[in-house]
Amino acid sequence: MFQSKIAGMGYYVPKNVYTNNDLTRFMDTSDEWIQERTGIKERRFADRIGETTTTMGCQAAKQAIERAGTTAADIDFIIFATLSPDYYFPGCGVLLQREMGMGEIGALDIRNQCSGFIYALSIADQFIKTGMYKNILVVGSEKHSFALDFSTRGRNVSVIFGDGAGAAVLQPTTQAGQGILSTHLHSDGQDAEKLAMYYPGASGGQFLENQPTWPDQELGGMLMTKKMLDDGTAFPYMDGQAVFKKAVVKFPEVIEESLRRNELTTADLDLLIPHQANLRISQFIQKRLGLKDDQVFNNIQKYGNTTAASVPIALAEAWEEGKIKPGDLICLAAFGAGFTWGAALIRW
Ligand code: ACO
Image 1 (cartoon, rainbow, N blue to C red):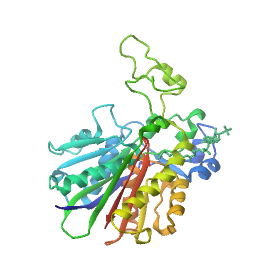
Image 2 (cartoon, protein in one colour):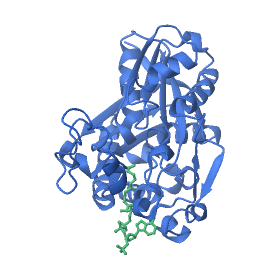
Image 3 (tube, protein in one colour):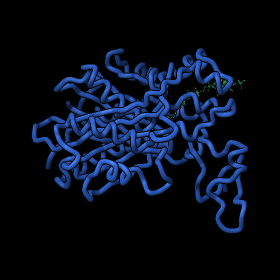
Image 4 (tube, rainbow, N blue to C red):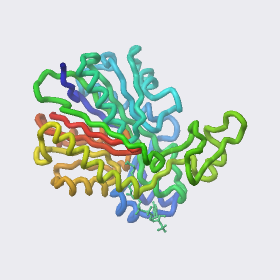
């Protein structure tokens, strides 16, 4: 049985910076409100044309592959996590395979939103452990800006999210005690509708209590209707307080679970890289676990919440800043829509 290690990481963020003040051009909000509630100062938005979830994923992937000391031709499996795919189907995995000129390798898409990268990492880890693959490319990428409501109606959601991509290459290691020590995945669908984008969807909104949007023709017509755009149900919905309450319980729970499984404690942790959901959530977790400032990495201030991309962007940036050294104990953790959550404990 092999262990898997992260051999290289990369990230890409679009060049277009939108500060909180820039958002006031579109909606009734303020820098003060956004910073106080979320910690976010600015985010990046992809070019409307030409830059997609896949193209950003490719940029991050190229850097991760190079840093892993390998080539695109050596990648033997792709796992792509996103909630903002280029197409409803097929997924971004095959688009990245095509874009990067890779061979006819397997490509898997993950739909686990904010915890997508942790789920992807866990799957990659199992494939490496069994010896099935030796060079797995794991990507998290999001282009949120294409589907947010930037009017005042959508301000509680749209000020939080940003675009970007992160990637990692996983390889086997025979060095005892190095690499991914364990991964932990959880879900609870009870509150699935509390953080969701309901359309396009085959339900036509029939399970939604307050906003059923019935199909407008006898057959078909359930994907997206003008009514959904007019009443705002075409855009993502978030019950912010429900998300907050669950996140601040499940984040610490799964981090402690990962440490316990490996007979370690928070004192052993060199760096926690939480999904960059909201700075207030990260601060809550830090306090709850009694971690020092230098034990927790945050970069949401610069990029907003990039969902599946946030953990790999933060991981790559922390590494670039010299905050991850050989032998360090690193915990990646995420919580998001579904709800789904998870953690990965890594000995670097
Ligand atoms: N600018 C100005 N005012 C706003 C904005 C905005 N962008 N958004 C909402 N408001 C207003 C509301 O209209 C409301 O006004 P009212 O009192 O006149 O009705 C007021 O601010 C308070 O609104 P609430 O929704 O109650 O604000 P709350 O204090 O709950 O903060 C927030 C909202 C920041 C979303 C908070 O609930 C939160 O942090 N939730 C966690 C959710 C989260 O972080 N999600 C991240 C994505 S999911 C994930 O990654 C796990």
